[in-house]
Length: 382
Ligand code: SF4
Picture 1 (cartoon, rainbow, N blue to C red):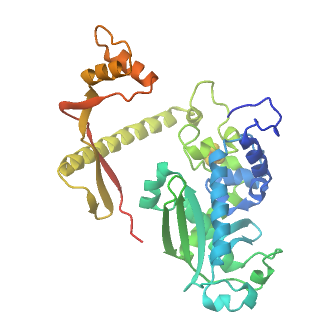
Picture 2 (cartoon, protein in one colour):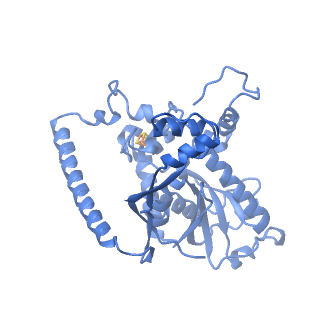
């Protein structure tokens, strides 16, 4: 991150100084009760419950951008569609903010007329809006929510089913409804780079919600954070750990210049296990590589298009371009530039670029750029 010696209010200060300051004041940043969104890692949840000091300040810029998009979309959905957004659910242990609750007609009709949301659903639906980067978008479309994201929304839905909306100002009319029978959960993924939207819905499964509750109970029963498993692979290997505020407490005593994971080795038994994992990983990699290479060769002659769950695309395979020295000499003469006695393509390209003149190229005889296969999950057309 850029450091500044100027006053934070100066126009030349980084605008992120303001964004970070505002983010630090957001209720979720200050929350000490376990939020459903904190269930991403058992040990992290343990640190929060035990009030551990946050020793690492991760780079929050991408997360803050996500928050801005999230807030903007939800607020506009509330204004334009009358959606019920950002509602709090809580019990003795957990606290969460549900992005969108769509009530069914029977439940909506129990509300005072002025509070009735428009467009009731066939069953009560709890929705979570998640913004994702384009880098992982294909994975999101293909595999949907992660286990932690699923757990988070199941816990929201379970709180709504067991307690109802929290009894707090601004939503007392909702609290009076009592426990709500949630029938469906929905994920609405939005790509931060393209705006693409992808929706996945699941029937509410009480068994899965009970599993999510057990997860929380296991965290509560642990004497301390160190008695809980690290659910991620650690700094340098997991973006979640890289951005975890408890990273330093979780991975203590790492020797300078060594990967954090070295602290996981205590004796020869650990070394034997790590070696066995390495060998197994290599075998999986070899088998995966073999599968990919065979499928790639089989598809070489297939036209682009949708096949089953995937879309096949091709890029490259175009005539390769090479410098057109004769045309470059002509451009030099037209621009009154000195033509080198011995044509030097590299120097001529630099001179043309400096002069703002397009560098002429021509197709290289018989040469093509490599043909690249692109496979993405098949998108449903809306
Ligand atoms: S550093 Fe990683 S493993 Fe440790 S608490 Fe944070 S997320 Fe969990």
